[in-house]
Image 1: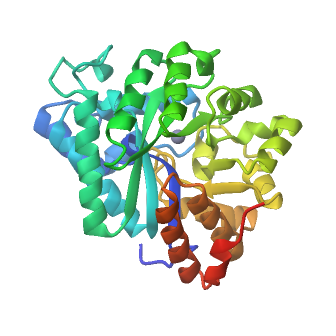
Image 2 (image 1 turned 60 degrees about the vertical axis):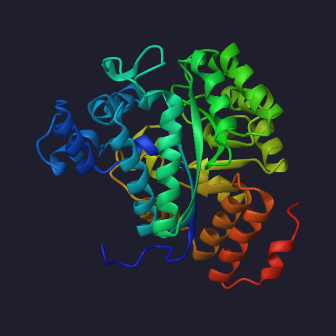
Length: 363
Ligand SMILES: [Zn+2]
């Protein structure tokens, strides 16, 4: 734990799920307190059951959430605690700015159809979930000195939730929420074009809510194209399979599209086959706009260090590239311009780069 990090400088993280970044101890605590059965007795055992060591299919991965979400969802205290502890975790990893995402509906047990995780109906609505998470993130921000914003997720299989998700983005836009996301199983045929999602993303464009979409992780380049052209996404969650369509990739490079790359995640989910070159190597060669992210550190038994170590040790990433990608992450963050500039200034200073670089226009 006392080892020097691979990149021992301030970092920016743009793609991490709150419900995939919980301490096993906290799950155990609320499982016991609420009398909800868990598959393990100790935090260590729980980490091993929830966590992955080898690649699993997407359904195998998604099944992991069934183990522990019932202990957290529907509980005000648990939700506040995971949000607060999340910020503490990021402070320890040397992250200075993070955008954390979650589905408010998947943490609620009232005014959500169907009620997730086989919970009995309660009185915690998606709206109140966002209020609680936002308040705790803001408290964590003050206590741990990490700047935090949040992204609310629509779920591909539940287009009926999406209109409310974007309304919640609007309602809480001055209390940490900066964007809407589309998450879940992107192999559900035609799911980018479900009217619920399309209407929500149209409304996001109309009301100035930023947009990111999970696309091209396990799905094809077509899903990426839909995310860009139909949903008007400003960033791509993963986006690896863009590379299968040369013309689309060339266009996105030219448009300076940001790819939220999650290296260790892509290995464990099978999104990247480890006998092939990792897409991020290509992104690096082409000086694409991308970031390095953990995605679901609880399930991948990882920290941001895992992703930096992996790219340094097996892909030859250098300190210079780490600086470049973090600056690109800051530039592609969903902060308003003045706050983005402050973040960039902080990075330039910490990286020993002239502040004038901040004014350099991006081609
Ligand atoms: Zn993700």
